[in-house]
Image (cartoon, rainbow, N blue to C red; front, side, top):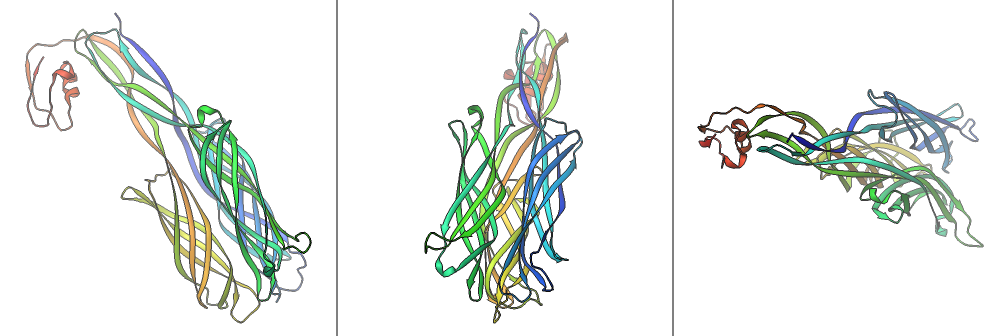
Length: 499
């Protein structure tokens, strides 16, 4: 009977290419009522939203928007003013080998915002860090069984292949209204900061349910003397169903991108307190992984009849997807600039964390960087608000080994600053870091097996001294005897074989 094989096919995920880039985006807005009075920007922030990802031949095109906001002071006024500006993002990343239809994961963060006043306009310069990974699924054939030949010795290995199988998203609208204390004397909403925490991703009827919280901080203008603004902190609940086939809902993760934030202060009914209303539009994206488990022929040889010839191939597979989420409190002391007025009372704190480097230590990942901090405060003995910049270094440990493919998402959940002295601040930052690492490894398998020339052997006794690393299989294959007949093998210990 001729040699026969059974073949099984599965899909292997391959990283085609990855790129990172920093893009500078410019936006501007007319400053209403600006005349001869000096305009001093106090706080500036921006949010990046990537709306379209177009994979083309040898490149990826990203399109999105950047929403900018600023709080400023006009002349010698003590009141705070605010404005917003919009800009579009269109950037091309060249990645040789990518083709339309391939899977693409794209993300972006704002790392730095600068605002300045020029000729009646507020001009924003926003640094955006972009990351792109392009994946493809390739069919791989493995030999799962060998039949038809007597005396053949085979060894099969289990293969686990994890792949990104699907992506789905839904737009979610989060909205809530809360009463503001009358003592606050709230006037208008000036600026918002949002951080979204995903707490649960679980299968549900019709798809995957994503639950979490949007942690919002709103700077509200106040009519209280010597207190032109106050930060109001509140959570908005996230509970969104994303449609996905049931068979893909086993291994899923979720990402949330904030598209827009709108807040306003309204008068309550009758003589009621003022009310703060916030609406957040966000895209909830679910990524589903699937796993193939197969048995693959790794080696074979014959002990009688004809020789067995094999052709081997190294196949690179994604063996696992490691995820880790860590929240840490970072404390530190920062000095304000020499020319800045002394700090009396802190009104608001704005932070942009920037990752400098990462490394692995003792089986864990270490992430280090600098938190760019800007503090809005009232100087001691003055009713005119001021702002100061500072940098706070941070270091976080995550319980996984990182590599060049690791996707790291770092955000600030809360930031507080207190004046220790007029020239220094005590900072407390609640940082949240989420890491995803796809572990890849090469596996050697047999892709083709055929019968060769007749097996020629001289019967006799062979005494062999195994080399380090050799096993019973290696000796059995060398002399054409069943591996089970070799016995125990130890390096440097003679093994007697009957051929």
